[in-house]
Image 1 (cartoon, rainbow, N blue to C red):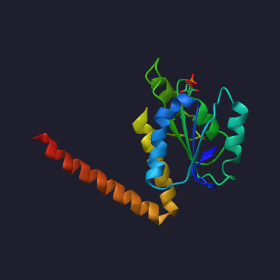
Image 2 (cartoon, rainbow, N blue to C red):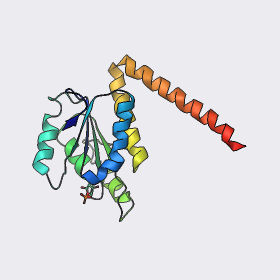
Image 3 (cartoon, rainbow, N blue to C red):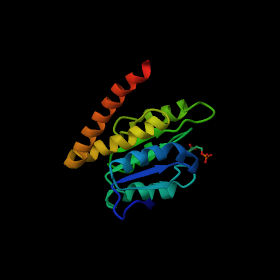
Length: 167
Ligand code: RP5
């Protein structure tokens, strides 16, 4: 796993390097809040043993939240969630053939008992996955909670400033 520090709190995994263009938005959100993370391509279909090892060892490795992006027959988030009780956030990649609806439905329709928190399709979903991971970590981290408050204030300011463009 490629890590920003030796002790990542979040793991950002994706089914293919082709998902990186989307998943980098999750990493950018984590960077913005200074949350240490690791990132890696792990495929549910092409590297199933690696996926199982990752999911089963993530908690003992110190990971607190897993963000998993996948497209098409997007089984990675669900199969990881099946093998860990850590929170798993699934990001549906916008596929070419079906525009990500296939990815969304593959990730969101989990059977009762094995939750995956599913975001929107594509880049905004990846950004929100990063932000949701920060929110989860902020439960026990006051500094992150305050940084999230500041971030929300900055969004308000951006909306107000955008009024100047309406002339
Ligand atoms: C999925 O298949 C990946 O998550 C990716 O979105 C999709 C296509 O993968 P590539 O054929 O581009 O490697 O497993």
